[in-house]
Image (tube, rainbow, N blue to C red):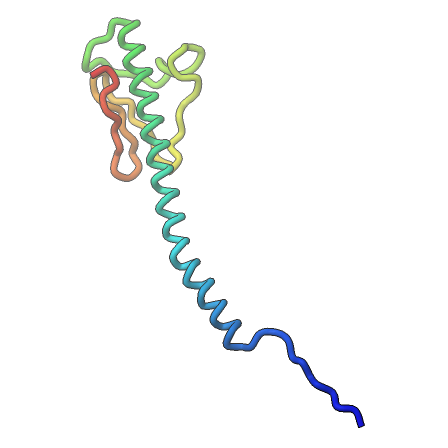
Length: 120
């Protein structure tokens, strides 16, 4: 008479449930961090765009002899001139307000980040 030894291989239900719980825990920690990182990156891009706008405003004002308080039209800074090649786009969907010469530009999205004055 032959005796067969059954060797069972595989994972038990408890082991699978523990692995799924650990993966769920890691995802619940990681997803909010990714969202926060995305917002920080968008804010950084927005600040860089604002600094580019402010720099272009200052160059335009110096070359055209504009004084503080003179209005700035985006068309004066964008296009074939050397100031800005194309209109910067806010990564968060906001719009940039160029303001007048001597006043920092700002973004309509969120907390309205403003760059430090370029020529100070």
